[in-house]
Length: 114
Image (cartoon, rainbow, N blue to C red):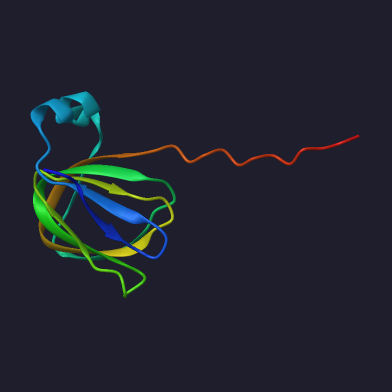
């Protein structure tokens, strides 16, 4: 199944529904850290790209830009959240997931001329 995408003002949340065991293994998801949370609403700001695989749970993510549609995902989905996104996670069923953050790009240093 092709990934579905939800656009926000500047970036896109990518959701791959029910990834294959092969893709799961290629990404090394079992070696990623784990995170869990109970139902509730959580305001988050991402300073680097985050990829997560939900083991259980149901989530809707609303971009700070309320004109964007919500991204919905659940157990089995692989989700990529772009750097710079401000959003609210609306967790309707407790979440357990594996996640990883991509390193932020190093700031470019100004060039000096003599």
